[in-house]
Amino acid sequence: MEVLVSSTPDEAASRAAEVVLEGLAGADGDPVLGLATGSSPLGLYRELGRAVQEGRADFSRTHGVALDEYVGLPPGHPEGYRQVLLREVCDVVGLDPERLAVPDGTVPDLAALQRAAAAYEQRIRELGGVDVQVLGIGANGHLGFNEPGSALTSRTRVKRLSQRTRQDNARFFTGLDDVPTHCLTQGLGTILAARRLVLVATGEAKTEAVASALEGALTASVPASVLQWHPDTVVCLDEAAAAGLRNRAYYDDAAAGLPER
Ligand code: GLP
Image 1: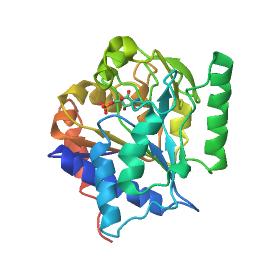
Image 2: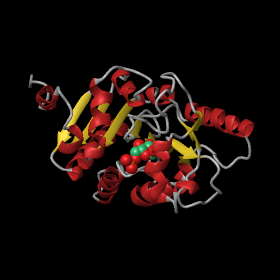
Image 3: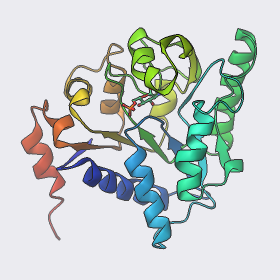
């Protein structure tokens, strides 16, 4: 695990963008980029857009794969994650909307949702797996919408949202009652199958979750602790999000790089 601490959220975003581009450059065939929603990766997506404008990146052949989606919002709802990713990623980096895969949370009943979850896993397999998965972290340590208690080996499935997550996300809706109660989310096992994980977290609201995820026990109670299990995880933080880390001095030393040969 590499932990890169930057002095500002903007700097964390720009380092995260470089890490993402490096990971995609190593892709075999058309690259596959896993996409998180939320405020944390917005700066990263802007930086990727800037790289495109400067001719350092091109997403025209990249496939985008969403991390999760709400259940029960009507198709085209502006807060549905398909629409969010169209606005915040496709429009910004030039990813083809036809190449954006999002689990279908609009289907009518549980059996149809379970089929949508299985179809989503199948789609990821057809694409050859995810090369780089972008992640944020919930204040309760969730990853995607894998709430505390999620199986560490779980695959895409229907999950109930925690009250905490619904409250955190109520700002995007007219009120708490309008926030969906369920979602479809890639499982922790699905996330772990990506070839590189890039987590972005900034601000003091994430200090505790980051410390538990990176330095606490590997446990379903802190879903983001699965980052410790992955062989290629890069965590991009600002000072505030890194403030609870005990091992900080070592991360800074390690980030200075390998010796010249
Ligand atoms: C939502 C998303 C997560 C995201 C989390 C944190 O719950 N499903 O993927 O990581 O929000 O959001 P933010 O980055 O806005 O704090």
